[in-house]
Each structure stands twice: as structure tokens, then as C-alpha cells.
Image 1 (tube, rainbow, N blue to C red):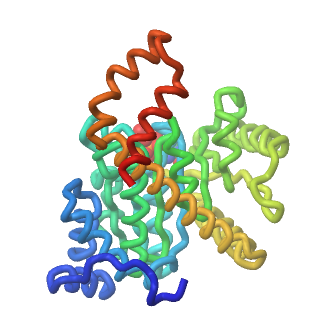
Image 2 (image 1 turned 30 degrees about the vertical axis):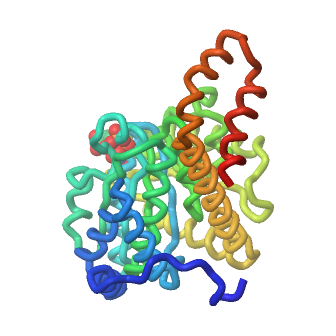
Length: 337
Ligand SMILES: Nc1nc2c(ncn2[C@@H]2O[C@H](COP(=O)(O)OP(=O)(O)OP(=O)(O)O)[C@@H](O)[C@H]2O)c(=O)[nH]1
């Protein structure tokens, strides 16, 4: 489609233009305000957020997006702080975002909480944003993806997206990262059954943290994890996920970690996989939004709302088939167009 035929969102007013200018000038206050718009549930805020993001879009895509997951207590925040400080030493700017599905239940966020990464949060080259707290996992992930774009427009070189090692949030984070890293404990190898196979399959890199506690156990876990990874089909024909060991607490192994991330990025860029993966992620993101939009539109249709409870009950009680009920409800949408 020629750029002139592309659908446009509403034009920017002076306030939103100043947000865009501020973000592009790498100022943190306009960035934070933009993210507040992104996270808002209000329709008018969402429309403004879309316009702002569209203006920022040509300036996005430049960061390395690194997803980090691991069970509570594995040392994610200790590691992210160590990594962030290391990257800043290398002259890079780092944004830390989080996808925490529990935040939508508790209304508060565990991950990305500033007090968890005190030294990093005080550094002007770092930006830490807790998980958005509203909505389903899909909603939370959606807001985080948009926040990631805003951070890229604000010139951050590395975006770290943290998530807890439970549930579907890992898939959501893997789907928005260039590289997905899984943190493990030194006893991980003893209980390989406990590590969900699906999550190992997502990993581009596995890290055994807390190597300082028991080096022998760490080395054993590393070997066992390597064997386990070998048995899985690699995600990429050009990359076998390595298993590293480190101590986040002592800041040992952090440089090697980053070197591996850079090797991965260079390999993926050389083979074209980097670009292919981002294109695939963007396409999947659009379809997710279409699916969610259709579902919301369907549920808000007056006749669907009127008939849904009785039809649901009829389906549950075997009075009608799910397919007949679905057909009937979907027809209301067809009649509407
Ligand atoms: N010995 C040792 N302890 C560590 C290391 N990394 C983290 N810890 C400790 O492990 C505990 C948990 O670390 P966190 O960084 O809070 O772990 P987390 O994964 O962010 O945990 P949640 O906040 O519960 O998700 C803390 O007491 C850390 O000091 C390490 O490399 N070695």
C-alpha cells in the first residue's frame, strides 16, 4: 500500500506534539506521560496514545529487546540491576519493563518495582517501569509492547522485559523480545521434570544464577541443562541455546552474558532471522488486536448481550449444540454489516 493510502489516526494537537518532541529529545518526563496515556483505559487517552505512537514509530526498532524470565527468588532483579549497571558502564541506556499477570489481580505490581533495583533506578541512563496493572495478560502484554516502542523512540539501546516464570506470561514476553533468556537455580538439573518443556523451548539462552553458592552443583546443572536443550528442536537453525553460569550478587559473568547476547544478535542479523522474527511478531501482534477487537465488538452487540446468557445455559444443559448457538450469535454480527 502506498504510504498516502495508509489509514491515519487523528492529527496531533499541541500537547501531544510536545510529548512526541520530548520523547524524541530523550526526556524522561514526556516518556513517562506517554506511557501513562498508553496504559490508560480511557477511550480518548487511547486514541491520543495511538496518534503519539504513530508519530514515534519511524524512530523505533533500534534497541536490542531482551526478555528475562525465571521463578520468584531466582535472582531476576539482582541480575537485571547488575546487567543494567554493566551496560551503562559501556555507554548504553537501559529501559526495564515488566509483564506481571498477577498485577491485574492484585492491582499492584511485583516486577519492575523501583525499590527492587535501587541503584539502577537512581541512574539517569536507566528507566524502570513496573508492569501495567490493568486487564488480562493480553492487555498487560499489549501495553508493555507499546511502552517498549516509546522507550525505543526515546533512544534506549537495550530494553529488558522481565517476567515471572509462571503461566503464559513467558510466551507473551518471548513474542516481544529478540532474545529470550531463562534464569535457573543451581539445583535446576536435579529436577529437570520441574522445568516446563514449553518454556525451555522458548529459551535462546539459559543462565544458571547463584554460582557462588555451590560451584559443583552449578556446573552439574549446566551440563544437565545442556543435555536437556540438545534433546529439544532448536528454535533457529543457526543458533543452539548456550547455558551460562553467573553470580548476579557478585556481578560475575555479566560481561560474558552480554557478549553472548551480542553474538546472538550478530548471528541473527547476518542470517536475516532477526528481521524475519520482528516481522512475524508485528504480524502476530496485529492479529491479536484484531481478534481482541472482534471479540469485544461481538460481546457489545445488543442482541448478543440479550441472547448470550440463555444460549449459554442451553449449551451447558445440552438443549442446543455449541455450534448452533455460535452460529446464531455470530449471525447478529453479519446482519449488522
Ligand atoms: N548467593 C547469591 N544470592 C543471590 C544471587 N542473585 C540473587 N540472590 C539473592 O536471591 C534472593 C532473591 O533475589 P531477587 O533478585 O529478589 O530474585 P527475583 O527473581 O527478582 O525474585 P522475585 O522478586 O520474587 O521475582 C535475594 O536475597 C538475592 O540477594 C546470586 O548470584 N548469589
